[in-house]
Structure formats: structure tokens, C-alpha cells
Image 1 (cartoon, helix red, strand yellow):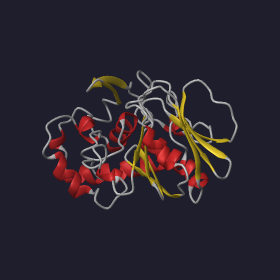
Image 2: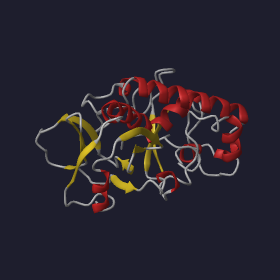
Image 3: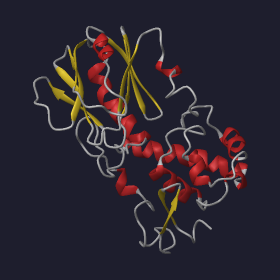
Length: 272
């Protein structure tokens, strides 16, 4: 699944082609994604794009005639193409622009989301966004905030920092990497994490996500940016996907466990 850095890279990749352009045509097929496509998407035709933002793993395209809310699901990706490029299998949605470019969504497993909101109905107040935790790069996300949140949870620190109601964007890959860098065992109960550790967690979360964004995201499975190029942060993963490999710090074998039906990777020597 694309995580926050991948979505940020995609948002940045499409924004330059969208802003100040008019949406001349909207296309969607008869396949349902997480929710069916609705005819109100045609309301975007003739609209001019004003802004492109990201909230958690959602992309919001703001226009003069309403908002387009996009989620890439498990395998979705947006690509910028020239007008007239033939659609491929699993190309389910696209918007055509006045600059003769097309923003096209391909989603093999169809867990993505494409919704229209009129101007008077902000997507930020929708069921998908209104209750989410703070962005990891925001002022609201700081050591004191994180400490207060963690103190209320007895589940593992790994599961808690991947909870979007605590903080958005810390997906499975990055949680393993952050906890390794912070030297915290992923099974540690969240309410046993100190304020000092929270300071390190906040700093390392920002550093690792920033580095991944700068390198174009990870190439785990299906992700590629809007320009079709693969990201390269995967080359910097220290523990994720490295079961039985030597730890890059101490040489101990990296182990893998299941937490909340997701794989967690860590070094039992460095993360005691």
C-alpha cells in the first residue's frame, strides 16, 4: 500500500500539471472501487484547479466547482500522460486538462477511492478526514502530544504509532524503521514509553519520512510516482523485509513477528 511519502510524492508530481488548468473531461468506467463512481464527478468538467493538498494518505484537488478526494488504496497509482494515450487494463478513472495532459488512476485491486464534494461541503469534514490525528510534520505533533496519547494505550508501541487517530502516515514499513532508529522494541506497551523517547520518536519519524519523500518513496510492490519512475528509499531500509539478515548496527539476526496481522521487523539486540 502506498504510504505517506508515496502519496506526498504523487501529490507533488501531479500538482504542477493541475494548478491553474481547466478540467475539460472526466472519465470513469463501470467498475466499483471502494465505493462506486458517481455521476456527480461530471460536475468537475469546466472547473479550474486552484490547489492540490494531501491529508494523511488522501489527495484533495480543490477546484472552482468543488473538490476531488482521492485515495490510492492498496495498489492504486496516478500517472500524468499526454492526451490520447490509450487506456490500459485497470485504468478506472481520469481527468483531462486544458494543457492536453491526463491524470489517470490505475488500480488493480480496486481498493482506491474517488469522490466529489461540492464547494459548500468540505472533504476535510467528511467521514474519511474529520477525526484523523495530526500530520507528522505539523506543530501539533510534538513530544508532549505524543506522550499524552501513548499514555492512554496499553497496546504495543508499533500498533499505536500506526494508528491514524494518533498520528497519520506512519505505515507498516516506516514504523519498523522508526522504532529501529529509536532503539525501541516494537512490542513495548505504548504507555511505557518515556517523554524522552517520545522526543526521539517525533524527530526520527520526521527524519525518515522526509528522507523517503526526497528519494521518491519506497519501491515495495506496486508503487511508482506520477512520472512512472520508481522510488529508491527501499535501498535505505534497515530492518523492514530483512528477516534473518544481519543488523546493520550490531550484526545480530533481524527477526520478524506479526502484530495486528502485519509483519514487524526489528533487531532484538539493538531494540531490547
